[in-house]
Amino acid sequence: MTIDVSLDTVPHWIGGAAMSSAAGPRAKIHDPATGRVIGTVVLGGADAVDDAVMSARTAAAAWGGTPSPARASVLHRFRALLHEQLDDLAWIITAEQGKTLADARGELARAIEAIDVSLSVVQQLKGEYAEQVANGVDTYSFRQPLGVCAGITPFNFPVMVPVSMFAAAIACGNAFVLKPSEQVPSAAVRLAQIATDAGLPNGVLNVVHGGVEAAEALIDHPDVAAVSFVGSTPVARAIYRRSADAGKKVQALGGAKNHMVVLPDADLDAAADALVSAAYGAAGQRCMAVTVAVAVGAAADALVPKIAERANAFKVGPGAALGTDMGPLISATALDRVRSALQRSVEQGGRLVVDGRKLTPPGAGYFIGPSLVDGVRVESDLYRDEVFGPVLSVLRTEDLEQALQIVNDNPYGNGAIIFTGSGAAARRFSREVSAGSVGINVPIPVPISWFGFGGWGDSRFGDDGLNYDAYRFYTRSKVITQRWTDPTPGPSPHFVAAGSQ
Ligand code: NAD
Image (cartoon, rainbow, N blue to C red):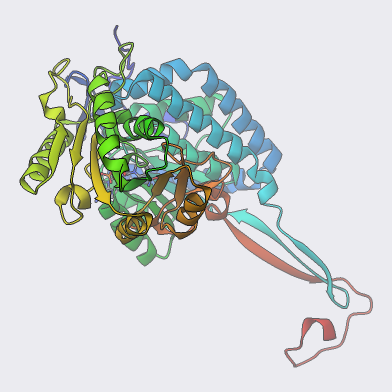
Protein backbone atom coordinates (compact mmCIF):
# COMPACT_ATOMS: atom_id res chain seq x y z
CA MET A 1 0.00 0.00 0.00
CA THR A 2 1.30 3.45 -0.81
CA ILE A 3 0.33 6.66 0.89
CA ASP A 4 -0.12 9.79 -1.18
CA VAL A 5 0.75 12.68 1.08
CA SER A 6 0.23 14.88 -2.00
CA LEU A 7 2.27 17.85 -0.81
CA ASP A 8 6.04 17.53 -1.27
CA THR A 9 6.71 20.73 0.61
CA VAL A 10 3.96 21.58 3.03
CA PRO A 11 3.22 25.31 2.73
CA HIS A 12 1.75 27.84 5.13
CA TRP A 13 -1.91 28.72 4.55
CA ILE A 14 -2.38 32.47 4.78
CA GLY A 15 -5.29 34.57 3.57
CA GLY A 16 -7.03 31.59 1.98
CA ALA A 17 -4.07 30.37 -0.10
CA ALA A 18 -0.99 28.17 0.17
CA MET A 19 2.16 30.25 0.73
CA SER A 20 5.74 29.14 0.67
CA SER A 21 8.89 30.93 -0.39
CA ALA A 22 11.48 29.18 -2.55
CA ALA A 23 14.18 29.97 0.00
CA GLY A 24 14.04 29.72 3.78
CA PRO A 25 14.42 26.94 6.30
CA ARG A 26 12.63 23.62 5.94
CA ALA A 27 12.21 20.61 8.24
CA LYS A 28 12.01 17.02 7.08
CA ILE A 29 8.83 15.02 7.63
CA HIS A 30 9.38 11.34 8.41
CA ASP A 31 7.11 8.35 8.03
CA PRO A 32 7.48 6.82 11.52
CA ALA A 33 6.73 3.36 10.14
CA THR A 34 9.73 3.37 7.78
CA GLY A 35 11.95 6.19 9.01
CA ARG A 36 11.95 7.52 5.45
CA VAL A 37 11.64 11.21 4.61
CA ILE A 38 8.26 11.71 2.93
CA GLY A 39 8.25 15.47 2.55
CA THR A 40 9.43 18.75 3.93
CA VAL A 41 7.69 21.62 5.65
CA VAL A 42 8.45 25.33 5.52
CA LEU A 43 9.53 26.76 8.85
CA GLY A 44 8.13 30.21 9.44
CA GLY A 45 9.54 32.95 11.63
CA ALA A 46 8.36 36.41 12.64
CA ASP A 47 7.68 37.48 9.04
CA ALA A 48 5.34 34.58 8.21
CA VAL A 49 3.62 35.01 11.56
CA ASP A 50 3.13 38.72 10.91
CA ASP A 51 1.62 37.99 7.47
CA ALA A 52 -0.78 35.48 8.99
CA VAL A 53 -1.80 37.72 11.89
CA MET A 54 -2.34 40.70 9.58
CA SER A 55 -4.52 38.56 7.35
CA ALA A 56 -6.44 37.30 10.40
CA ARG A 57 -6.85 40.80 11.83
CA THR A 58 -8.42 42.07 8.62
CA ALA A 59 -10.72 39.06 8.38
CA ALA A 60 -11.71 39.19 12.07
CA ALA A 61 -13.33 42.59 11.73
CA ALA A 62 -15.88 41.33 9.17
CA TRP A 63 -16.21 37.79 10.54
CA GLY A 64 -16.93 39.04 14.08
CA GLY A 65 -19.78 41.12 12.64
CA THR A 66 -21.20 38.26 10.56
CA PRO A 67 -24.49 37.04 12.08
CA SER A 68 -23.82 34.00 14.22
CA PRO A 69 -26.23 31.71 12.29
CA ALA A 70 -24.33 32.58 9.08
CA ARG A 71 -21.04 31.67 10.79
CA ALA A 72 -22.60 28.40 11.93
CA SER A 73 -23.69 27.65 8.33
CA VAL A 74 -20.08 27.79 7.17
CA LEU A 75 -19.08 25.39 9.93
CA HIS A 76 -21.93 23.08 8.91
CA ARG A 77 -20.50 22.97 5.38
CA PHE A 78 -17.00 22.48 6.78
CA ARG A 79 -18.29 19.52 8.79
CA ALA A 80 -19.95 18.01 5.69
CA LEU A 81 -16.81 18.37 3.53
CA LEU A 82 -14.63 17.00 6.30
CA HIS A 83 -16.90 13.99 6.43
CA GLU A 84 -16.40 13.42 2.70
CA GLN A 85 -12.61 13.51 3.14
CA LEU A 86 -12.32 11.33 6.23
CA ASP A 87 -10.44 8.54 4.46
CA ASP A 88 -7.90 10.93 2.98
CA LEU A 89 -7.37 12.64 6.29
CA ALA A 90 -6.97 9.32 8.11
CA TRP A 91 -4.21 8.38 5.64
CA ILE A 92 -2.46 11.71 6.15
CA ILE A 93 -2.57 11.28 9.94
CA THR A 94 -1.22 7.73 9.75
CA ALA A 95 1.49 8.63 7.25
CA GLU A 96 2.98 11.39 9.40
CA GLN A 97 2.00 10.44 12.95
CA GLY A 98 2.18 6.64 12.69
CA LYS A 99 -1.01 5.70 14.56
CA THR A 100 -3.24 2.97 13.15
CA LEU A 101 -5.86 3.93 10.57
CA ALA A 102 -8.58 2.85 13.02
CA ASP A 103 -7.15 5.20 15.62
CA ALA A 104 -6.88 8.00 13.05
CA ARG A 105 -10.57 7.50 12.23
CA GLY A 106 -11.37 7.65 15.94
CA GLU A 107 -9.49 10.95 16.15
CA LEU A 108 -11.50 12.28 13.20
CA ALA A 109 -14.77 11.25 14.82
CA ARG A 110 -13.77 13.23 17.91
CA ALA A 111 -12.89 16.23 15.72
CA ILE A 112 -16.35 16.11 14.16
CA GLU A 113 -17.87 15.97 17.62
CA ALA A 114 -15.90 19.12 18.51
CA ILE A 115 -17.38 20.87 15.46
CA ASP A 116 -20.87 19.81 16.59
CA VAL A 117 -20.25 21.36 19.97
CA SER A 118 -18.86 24.55 18.43
CA LEU A 119 -22.10 24.84 16.44
CA SER A 120 -24.02 25.02 19.68
CA VAL A 121 -21.97 27.93 21.02
CA VAL A 122 -24.28 30.39 19.30
CA GLN A 123 -26.71 29.86 22.12
CA GLN A 124 -23.95 30.29 24.73
CA LEU A 125 -23.21 33.83 23.53
CA LYS A 126 -26.65 35.17 24.32
CA GLY A 127 -25.94 36.25 27.90
CA GLU A 128 -28.41 37.26 30.58
CA TYR A 129 -31.05 39.93 31.09
CA ALA A 130 -32.28 41.54 34.31
CA GLU A 131 -35.27 43.80 33.85
CA GLN A 132 -36.12 46.85 36.04
CA VAL A 133 -33.03 46.71 38.28
CA ALA A 134 -33.75 50.37 39.07
CA ASN A 135 -36.55 52.63 37.98
CA GLY A 136 -36.55 52.44 34.19
CA VAL A 137 -33.23 50.58 34.21
CA ASP A 138 -32.46 47.15 32.73
CA THR A 139 -29.10 45.33 32.75
CA TYR A 140 -28.11 42.72 30.20
CA SER A 141 -24.98 40.98 29.00
CA PHE A 142 -23.66 39.23 25.93
CA ARG A 143 -20.38 37.74 24.83
CA GLN A 144 -18.21 39.10 22.05
CA PRO A 145 -15.24 37.63 20.15
CA LEU A 146 -11.67 38.56 21.04
CA GLY A 147 -10.31 39.22 17.54
CA VAL A 148 -7.29 37.12 16.55
CA CYS A 149 -6.65 33.91 18.50
CA ALA A 150 -3.65 31.60 18.14
CA GLY A 151 -3.27 27.85 18.63
CA ILE A 152 -0.04 25.88 19.13
CA THR A 153 -0.63 22.14 18.91
CA PRO A 154 1.18 18.82 19.55
CA PHE A 155 2.14 15.96 17.24
CA ASN A 156 -0.12 13.30 18.71
CA PHE A 157 -3.51 14.59 17.48
CA PRO A 158 -2.84 16.40 14.17
CA VAL A 159 -6.58 16.97 13.53
CA MET A 160 -8.56 16.66 16.76
CA VAL A 161 -6.65 19.19 18.85
CA PRO A 162 -6.44 21.92 16.15
CA VAL A 163 -10.13 21.47 15.27
CA SER A 164 -11.22 21.59 18.89
CA MET A 165 -9.50 24.98 19.13
CA PHE A 166 -10.29 26.69 15.84
CA ALA A 167 -13.88 25.45 15.36
CA ALA A 168 -14.88 27.00 18.68
CA ALA A 169 -12.86 30.19 18.11
CA ILE A 170 -14.31 30.69 14.63
CA ALA A 171 -17.89 29.88 15.69
CA CYS A 172 -17.51 32.60 18.33
CA GLY A 173 -16.53 35.13 15.64
CA ASN A 174 -12.74 35.18 15.92
CA ALA A 175 -10.08 34.68 13.28
CA PHE A 176 -7.45 32.05 14.03
CA VAL A 177 -3.76 31.40 13.38
CA LEU A 178 -2.72 27.80 13.92
CA LYS A 179 0.86 26.64 14.40
CA PRO A 180 0.70 22.87 14.23
CA SER A 181 3.50 20.53 15.23
CA GLU A 182 6.25 20.62 12.62
CA GLN A 183 6.36 16.81 12.85
CA VAL A 184 2.81 16.39 11.44
CA PRO A 185 2.10 19.51 9.36
CA SER A 186 0.02 18.27 6.38
CA ALA A 187 -3.34 17.70 8.06
CA ALA A 188 -3.56 21.31 9.25
CA VAL A 189 -3.18 22.65 5.71
CA ARG A 190 -5.75 20.19 4.41
CA LEU A 191 -8.18 21.34 7.12
CA ALA A 192 -7.66 24.99 6.15
CA GLN A 193 -8.20 24.14 2.50
CA ILE A 194 -11.45 22.33 3.33
CA ALA A 195 -12.61 25.29 5.42
CA THR A 196 -11.93 27.64 2.50
CA ASP A 197 -13.85 25.32 0.17
CA ALA A 198 -16.71 25.42 2.68
CA GLY A 199 -16.93 29.19 2.26
CA LEU A 200 -14.89 30.39 5.23
CA PRO A 201 -13.74 33.90 4.26
CA ASN A 202 -10.04 34.20 3.48
CA GLY A 203 -7.95 35.01 6.52
CA VAL A 204 -10.35 33.63 9.12
CA LEU A 205 -8.23 30.46 9.44
CA ASN A 206 -4.48 30.60 8.78
CA VAL A 207 -1.73 28.04 9.30
CA VAL A 208 1.89 28.96 9.95
CA HIS A 209 4.42 26.18 10.32
CA GLY A 210 7.52 26.27 12.44
CA GLY A 211 8.98 25.48 15.81
CA VAL A 212 9.87 27.62 18.80
CA GLU A 213 10.57 30.76 16.76
CA ALA A 214 7.14 30.78 15.12
CA ALA A 215 5.39 29.93 18.41
CA GLU A 216 7.11 32.75 20.26
CA ALA A 217 6.47 35.24 17.45
CA LEU A 218 2.77 34.36 17.66
CA ILE A 219 2.62 34.83 21.42
CA ASP A 220 4.50 38.12 21.22
CA HIS A 221 2.48 39.56 18.34
CA PRO A 222 0.53 42.57 19.64
CA ASP A 223 -2.53 41.71 17.52
CA VAL A 224 -2.94 38.21 18.97
CA ALA A 225 -5.47 38.43 21.81
CA ALA A 226 -5.45 34.85 23.11
CA VAL A 227 -3.19 31.80 23.01
CA SER A 228 -4.33 28.18 23.20
CA PHE A 229 -1.62 25.58 23.69
CA VAL A 230 -1.60 21.80 23.98
CA GLY A 231 1.70 19.97 24.44
CA SER A 232 4.23 18.97 27.08
CA THR A 233 4.27 20.48 30.57
CA PRO A 234 7.59 22.38 30.40
CA VAL A 235 6.48 24.11 27.20
CA ALA A 236 2.94 24.69 28.55
CA ARG A 237 4.39 26.38 31.61
CA ALA A 238 6.72 28.58 29.51
CA ILE A 239 3.92 29.53 27.12
CA TYR A 240 1.59 30.35 29.98
CA ARG A 241 4.19 32.67 31.52
CA ARG A 242 5.11 34.36 28.25
CA SER A 243 1.48 34.91 27.23
CA ALA A 244 0.48 36.16 30.67
CA ASP A 245 3.45 38.57 30.69
CA ALA A 246 2.14 39.96 27.42
CA GLY A 247 -1.30 40.43 29.03
CA LYS A 248 -3.03 37.80 26.90
CA LYS A 249 -5.70 35.27 27.64
CA VAL A 250 -3.99 31.88 27.73
CA GLN A 251 -4.99 28.25 28.16
CA ALA A 252 -2.04 25.84 28.18
CA LEU A 253 -2.75 22.12 28.49
CA GLY A 254 0.30 20.07 29.40
CA GLY A 255 1.50 16.52 29.89
CA ALA A 256 0.20 13.79 32.13
CA LYS A 257 0.80 10.79 34.31
CA ASN A 258 -2.59 9.08 34.42
CA HIS A 259 -3.23 6.43 37.08
CA MET A 260 -5.70 3.57 37.08
CA VAL A 261 -6.46 2.27 40.58
CA VAL A 262 -7.62 -1.36 40.57
CA LEU A 263 -9.37 -2.65 43.68
CA PRO A 264 -9.52 -6.39 44.46
CA ASP A 265 -13.32 -6.40 43.99
CA ALA A 266 -13.00 -5.21 40.37
CA ASP A 267 -13.61 -7.38 37.32
CA LEU A 268 -9.88 -7.99 36.80
CA ASP A 269 -10.24 -9.19 33.21
CA ALA A 270 -12.08 -6.00 32.34
CA ALA A 271 -9.41 -3.99 34.18
CA ALA A 272 -6.60 -5.76 32.32
CA ASP A 273 -8.36 -5.17 28.97
CA ALA A 274 -8.76 -1.50 29.85
CA LEU A 275 -5.16 -1.17 30.96
CA VAL A 276 -3.64 -2.55 27.77
CA SER A 277 -5.95 -0.41 25.60
CA ALA A 278 -5.20 2.73 27.58
CA ALA A 279 -1.47 2.12 28.06
CA TYR A 280 -0.47 0.77 24.66
CA GLY A 281 -3.07 2.18 22.24
CA ALA A 282 -1.48 4.79 19.93
CA ALA A 283 1.86 3.51 21.30
CA GLY A 284 1.15 5.32 24.57
CA GLN A 285 1.26 8.67 22.79
CA ARG A 286 -2.01 10.02 24.14
CA CYS A 287 -2.24 12.63 26.86
CA MET A 288 -4.90 10.43 28.45
CA ALA A 289 -2.86 7.21 28.16
CA VAL A 290 -2.74 5.30 31.42
CA THR A 291 0.88 4.93 32.47
CA VAL A 292 0.47 3.78 36.07
CA ALA A 293 -1.63 0.89 37.37
CA VAL A 294 -2.07 1.16 41.13
CA ALA A 295 -2.95 -2.37 42.17
CA VAL A 296 -4.56 -2.54 45.60
CA GLY A 297 -4.03 -5.54 47.91
CA ALA A 298 -4.75 -8.92 46.36
CA ALA A 299 -5.52 -7.36 42.95
CA ALA A 300 -1.80 -7.09 42.10
CA ASP A 301 -0.78 -10.74 41.89
CA ALA A 302 -3.80 -11.61 39.76
CA LEU A 303 -3.66 -8.51 37.57
CA VAL A 304 0.00 -8.47 36.49
CA PRO A 305 -0.07 -11.81 34.59
CA LYS A 306 -3.36 -10.83 32.92
CA ILE A 307 -1.81 -7.60 31.63
CA ALA A 308 1.36 -9.41 30.54
CA GLU A 309 -0.61 -11.99 28.56
CA ARG A 310 -2.52 -9.27 26.72
CA ALA A 311 0.59 -7.11 26.15
CA ASN A 312 2.42 -10.06 24.61
CA ALA A 313 -0.50 -10.59 22.21
CA PHE A 314 -0.45 -6.97 21.01
CA LYS A 315 0.32 -6.77 17.29
CA VAL A 316 2.89 -4.06 16.57
CA GLY A 317 3.27 -2.88 12.98
CA PRO A 318 2.79 -0.06 10.50
CA GLY A 319 -0.34 1.94 11.28
CA ALA A 320 -1.58 1.41 7.72
CA ALA A 321 -1.38 -2.41 7.88
CA LEU A 322 -4.53 -4.36 8.59
CA GLY A 323 -4.73 -5.93 12.05
CA THR A 324 -2.15 -3.64 13.68
CA ASP A 325 -2.91 -2.86 17.31
CA MET A 326 -0.08 -0.41 17.84
CA GLY A 327 2.03 1.62 15.43
CA PRO A 328 5.51 3.11 15.83
CA LEU A 329 6.64 6.04 17.95
CA ILE A 330 6.82 9.45 16.32
CA SER A 331 10.61 9.72 15.97
CA ALA A 332 14.04 8.22 16.59
CA THR A 333 14.39 10.64 19.52
CA ALA A 334 11.18 9.29 21.08
CA LEU A 335 12.45 5.72 20.61
CA ASP A 336 15.72 6.55 22.41
CA ARG A 337 13.78 8.21 25.23
CA VAL A 338 11.56 5.15 25.81
CA ARG A 339 14.46 2.70 25.57
CA SER A 340 16.53 4.60 28.10
CA ALA A 341 13.54 5.00 30.45
CA LEU A 342 13.21 1.20 30.47
CA GLN A 343 16.91 0.73 31.12
CA ARG A 344 16.85 3.17 34.04
CA SER A 345 13.70 1.57 35.47
CA VAL A 346 15.54 -1.73 35.85
CA GLU A 347 18.59 -0.02 37.36
CA GLN A 348 16.23 1.62 39.87
CA GLY A 349 14.65 -1.64 41.02
CA GLY A 350 11.69 -2.14 38.65
CA ARG A 351 10.91 -5.68 37.45
CA LEU A 352 10.54 -5.78 33.69
CA VAL A 353 7.71 -8.29 33.19
CA VAL A 354 7.32 -7.50 29.48
CA ASP A 355 10.27 -5.85 27.71
CA GLY A 356 9.22 -4.02 24.56
CA ARG A 357 12.85 -3.70 23.47
CA LYS A 358 12.82 -7.40 22.62
CA LEU A 359 10.37 -6.84 19.77
CA THR A 360 11.65 -7.81 16.36
CA PRO A 361 10.85 -4.55 14.59
CA PRO A 362 8.43 -4.98 11.69
CA GLY A 363 10.47 -2.58 9.53
CA ALA A 364 13.00 0.21 9.77
CA GLY A 365 10.64 2.58 11.60
CA TYR A 366 10.57 3.72 15.21
CA PHE A 367 9.05 0.56 16.68
CA ILE A 368 9.09 -0.73 20.21
CA GLY A 369 6.75 -3.26 21.81
CA PRO A 370 4.54 -2.78 24.87
CA SER A 371 6.40 -2.89 28.19
CA LEU A 372 5.19 -3.74 31.68
CA VAL A 373 7.26 -2.85 34.75
CA ASP A 374 6.17 -4.17 38.15
CA GLY A 375 7.27 -2.97 41.58
CA VAL A 376 7.86 0.61 40.45
CA ARG A 377 8.60 3.05 43.25
CA VAL A 378 7.32 6.63 43.38
CA GLU A 379 10.90 7.95 43.67
CA SER A 380 11.96 6.32 40.40
CA ASP A 381 12.45 8.23 37.15
CA LEU A 382 9.98 5.94 35.40
CA TYR A 383 7.25 7.05 37.80
CA ARG A 384 8.17 10.73 37.85
CA ASP A 385 8.80 11.39 34.14
CA GLU A 386 6.23 11.47 31.37
CA VAL A 387 7.71 8.77 29.11
CA PHE A 388 5.09 9.19 26.36
CA GLY A 389 5.50 5.67 25.02
CA PRO A 390 3.95 2.21 25.53
CA VAL A 391 5.23 1.60 29.06
CA LEU A 392 2.93 0.67 31.94
CA SER A 393 4.23 0.83 35.52
CA VAL A 394 2.61 -1.16 38.31
CA LEU A 395 2.64 0.21 41.86
CA ARG A 396 1.34 -1.92 44.71
CA THR A 397 -0.57 -0.49 47.65
CA GLU A 398 -2.44 -1.85 50.65
CA ASP A 399 -5.71 0.03 50.40
CA LEU A 400 -7.71 2.73 48.59
CA GLU A 401 -6.50 5.33 51.09
CA GLN A 402 -2.88 4.74 50.10
CA ALA A 403 -3.77 4.59 46.41
CA LEU A 404 -5.52 7.97 46.59
CA GLN A 405 -2.52 9.41 48.39
CA ILE A 406 -0.21 8.30 45.57
CA VAL A 407 -2.44 9.68 42.83
CA ASN A 408 -2.98 12.98 44.63
CA ASP A 409 0.71 13.46 45.47
CA ASN A 410 1.55 13.29 41.77
CA PRO A 411 1.98 16.78 40.29
CA TYR A 412 -0.01 15.95 37.16
CA GLY A 413 -3.79 15.76 37.21
CA ASN A 414 -5.04 15.06 33.71
CA GLY A 415 -7.02 11.86 34.23
CA ALA A 416 -7.54 9.19 36.90
CA ILE A 417 -9.54 5.99 36.78
CA ILE A 418 -10.81 3.45 39.27
CA PHE A 419 -11.86 -0.11 38.55
CA THR A 420 -14.06 -1.51 41.29
CA GLY A 421 -17.32 -3.30 42.01
CA SER A 422 -18.06 -0.96 44.89
CA GLY A 423 -20.22 2.11 44.33
CA ALA A 424 -19.05 3.57 47.62
CA ALA A 425 -15.36 3.23 46.68
CA ALA A 426 -16.04 4.71 43.23
CA ARG A 427 -17.93 7.63 44.70
CA ARG A 428 -15.19 8.33 47.23
CA PHE A 429 -12.55 8.17 44.50
CA SER A 430 -14.42 10.53 42.18
CA ARG A 431 -14.90 13.06 44.98
CA GLU A 432 -11.40 12.95 46.45
CA VAL A 433 -9.12 12.37 43.48
CA SER A 434 -7.14 15.31 42.12
CA ALA A 435 -7.75 15.17 38.36
CA GLY A 436 -9.74 17.00 35.71
CA SER A 437 -11.25 13.88 34.08
CA VAL A 438 -12.19 10.84 36.15
CA GLY A 439 -13.17 7.37 34.96
CA ILE A 440 -15.08 4.63 36.73
CA ASN A 441 -14.66 1.23 35.09
CA VAL A 442 -13.71 2.84 31.75
CA PRO A 443 -10.25 2.79 30.13
CA ILE A 444 -9.85 6.43 29.05
CA PRO A 445 -12.09 9.06 30.64
CA VAL A 446 -12.02 11.65 27.86
CA PRO A 447 -15.50 13.09 28.21
CA ILE A 448 -17.75 13.65 25.26
CA SER A 449 -17.15 17.18 23.90
CA TRP A 450 -20.40 18.53 25.40
CA PHE A 451 -18.34 18.74 28.59
CA GLY A 452 -15.21 20.80 29.12
CA PHE A 453 -11.79 19.14 28.87
CA GLY A 454 -8.61 19.94 30.75
CA GLY A 455 -6.49 18.65 33.60
CA TRP A 456 -5.51 19.91 37.03
CA GLY A 457 -2.09 20.64 38.51
CA ASP A 458 0.82 20.51 36.08
CA SER A 459 -1.49 19.23 33.34
CA ARG A 460 -3.09 22.64 32.74
CA PHE A 461 -2.04 26.23 33.17
CA GLY A 462 -4.77 28.81 32.77
CA ASP A 463 -8.44 28.57 33.35
CA ASP A 464 -11.00 27.50 30.73
CA GLY A 465 -10.44 24.17 29.01
CA LEU A 466 -11.29 22.95 25.54
CA ASN A 467 -14.52 21.72 23.96
CA TYR A 468 -17.65 22.86 25.82
CA ASP A 469 -15.63 25.30 27.96
CA ALA A 470 -13.98 26.88 24.92
CA TYR A 471 -16.69 29.45 24.16
CA ARG A 472 -15.84 31.17 27.44
CA PHE A 473 -12.16 31.29 26.51
CA TYR A 474 -12.74 32.64 23.00
CA THR A 475 -15.17 35.39 24.03
CA ARG A 476 -15.46 38.09 26.65
CA SER A 477 -18.55 39.28 28.38
CA LYS A 478 -19.97 42.78 28.11
CA VAL A 479 -22.62 44.04 30.53
CA ILE A 480 -24.95 46.86 29.47
CA THR A 481 -26.98 48.97 31.89
CA GLN A 482 -29.60 51.09 30.12
CA ARG A 483 -32.28 53.54 31.07
CA TRP A 484 -35.18 54.59 28.85
CA THR A 485 -37.48 56.72 30.93
CA ASP A 486 -39.52 59.80 30.38
CA PRO A 487 -38.83 62.10 32.09
CA THR A 488 -35.21 61.24 33.09
CA PRO A 489 -34.28 61.65 36.78
CA GLY A 490 -32.23 64.70 37.73
CA PRO A 491 -28.48 64.62 38.55
CA SER A 492 -27.28 62.79 41.67
CA PRO A 493 -23.70 63.08 43.01
CA HIS A 494 -24.06 59.88 45.07
CA PHE A 495 -23.17 56.26 44.41
CA VAL A 496 -26.50 54.71 45.31
CA ALA A 497 -28.01 51.26 45.47
CA ALA A 498 -29.59 50.38 42.14
CA GLY A 499 -33.14 50.00 43.46
CA SER A 500 -33.22 53.42 45.09
CA GLN A 501 -32.57 55.37 41.87
P1 NAD B 1 5.72 19.71 22.65
O1 NAD B 1 5.47 20.45 23.90
O2 NAD B 1 7.10 19.28 22.35
O3 NAD B 1 5.25 20.59 21.37
C1 NAD B 1 3.95 21.09 21.28
C2 NAD B 1 3.94 22.31 20.36
O4 NAD B 1 4.76 23.33 20.94
C3 NAD B 1 4.52 22.06 18.97
O5 NAD B 1 3.76 22.79 18.05
C4 NAD B 1 5.95 22.58 19.07
O6 NAD B 1 6.44 23.05 17.84
C5 NAD B 1 5.78 23.73 20.05
N1 NAD B 1 6.96 23.99 20.88
C6 NAD B 1 7.90 23.10 21.28
N2 NAD B 1 8.79 23.70 22.10
C7 NAD B 1 8.38 24.99 22.24
C8 NAD B 1 8.87 26.10 22.98
N3 NAD B 1 9.97 26.02 23.74
N4 NAD B 1 8.21 27.27 22.88
C9 NAD B 1 7.09 27.38 22.12
N5 NAD B 1 6.58 26.36 21.41
C10 NAD B 1 7.21 25.16 21.47
O7 NAD B 1 4.71 18.46 22.64
P2 NAD B 1 4.62 17.26 21.61
O8 NAD B 1 5.81 16.37 21.79
O9 NAD B 1 4.30 17.75 20.26
O10 NAD B 1 3.30 16.51 22.14
C11 NAD B 1 3.32 15.59 23.20
C12 NAD B 1 2.96 16.24 24.53
O11 NAD B 1 1.67 16.86 24.45
C13 NAD B 1 2.85 15.24 25.67
O12 NAD B 1 3.46 15.81 26.80
C14 NAD B 1 1.35 15.09 25.87
O13 NAD B 1 0.98 14.68 27.17
C15 NAD B 1 0.88 16.47 25.57
N6 NAD B 1 -0.53 16.50 25.22
C16 NAD B 1 -1.40 16.99 26.14
C17 NAD B 1 -2.77 17.02 25.86
C18 NAD B 1 -3.75 17.53 26.88
O14 NAD B 1 -4.92 17.62 26.56
N7 NAD B 1 -3.33 17.87 28.09
C19 NAD B 1 -3.24 16.57 24.61
C20 NAD B 1 -2.31 16.09 23.69
C21 NAD B 1 -0.95 16.06 24.00
